Length: 450
Image (cartoon, rainbow, N blue to C red; front, top):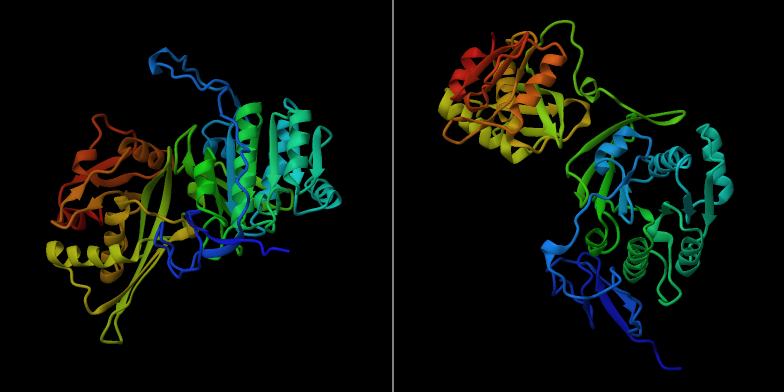
């Protein structure tokens, strides 16, 4: 019997090469080539639309697709308003984070108005039924199919034509056309492509559950994220009850939206006021604590930035950030020294964003520096004060996006003062709040104690 021909596929870009190499020749990633069996080329694809004719873009009727609300407002927020007919959603997250629990809750809620199907490839029907019973869900209208073979799943989807189908998970599904094992690069890519085509042609909304690697990225080829319409990441600390869903790609809505949940005995419940999670409750103002308003998609969130500045015991002072960018801290401390005359070169500086939230926007710059100054001088900031602003290398305070919305959110939660960039000064006064606009870093340091 002739030996089967093998090729090497890149787990990052899906590129193929005939021999193994340390570096992928297509995307230059290291140690990403894995051996797979070369498959015979068979045409298995049909066009997304019924006709392949050339059309004038202005003549095509553009209309908003109707959405299916999931019954979970935080999930709808991240999706952009709900599920879209024919849309494909990829939901990734760590094991045990609550992916299957959330989707079972969503299907239970949607089953009242729509036909739904839960395809379980990892758990038996009894295990899923046991979870539904534990969560006290009404699943009388939820159909379950325990199967991992792609062709059988396609046949059931074509026959039953559900409005929403969940595939849990894409790494367990395999196609008979390919000889490689489930979860391999070839199988994941092929199964995802076939299910995506089925969703577009039939109008069924398909949710794919994806595993993640040790680094936190979605397992399988990178092309998997390009195929689907929406990519959601389920994040959270396993030692905490709080979970967050973040949209990294969404063809039907805004990206970087954030949904916040709390894990309870009855499953995941929505957190209506997530700002309460990210604020510590001190009896009195403490040094090194500064409240900022960050923007997650369309949602303003109040987050407490904590700083601890201590005399360094080694020649190389430590710079440590939790939830913020560490390299940016070194740059900000240099600006603080140069433009506000406050040196920290002989101090250890530790920064923490309370509640496990990750802040990537530069709008946290001013809050970080004022928290550092507060800790260094051992003087707390004024009571009920929030701070927003980006700090430039020349010591200027730059404006942030959606400044008005951030101030309104802070006022709603009872904050009385705000240090903001001069360019973000609102045209109309905000009731109950004193606005302190600043143009330079040294001005903000002067006003920080009220």
